[in-house]
Length: 260
Image (cartoon, rainbow, N blue to C red; front, side, top):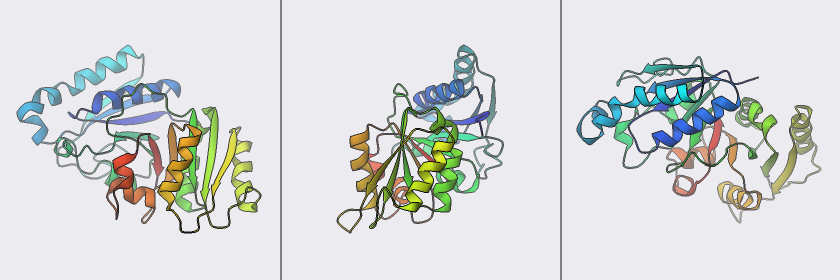
């Protein structure tokens, strides 16, 4: 698999310029076409955000041309809500940002959560306030739990994993051991794709939760990307998009590539 078409969602929010820089970097690295999709709302076209909203197409076109990319641009209708209407079906990767608490009204509310769970396309979600300067995909942590969704995420992220300097497979389980057959199986599978793999396990016995254990591991590994499955009651998914707690959405500081 290779990334040949990458969609970046554009809006009048403060995080859009860094999101576009990141998408351009990823598209350049993978020699992909970059497709800009303007998801501005009717509200964005009024008040102080109007000038920024009207400049989205020109700024995207200029940036893509300067990067020497093959590109395309689509304005989505403000009332768009399906994956088809938001141009996600003919893409290998979607790029967006966590919703900014003060700027949710500027971008279509279907992005990111609804599109992530309906499009069938992996999504790179950048944290609010991301600068677009730091590299993505050099030190990657896979949040692995042997589920269908995690398996899908690993295969969707394979172009990034193969190019990474190091990939850490993080397993949170009460019976974790590096020598467990299932743990060795995912390690061997990745190595057959020429991925450089290290194992990182946490024997969860109720003293902490998945998210806390994961980020404790990230502190040690200096990771710049998390790869994980997005599924109904995943702690990572629920925390990012409004589940029982807000721990992750309040503290996450690195990008996450998710698949459903």
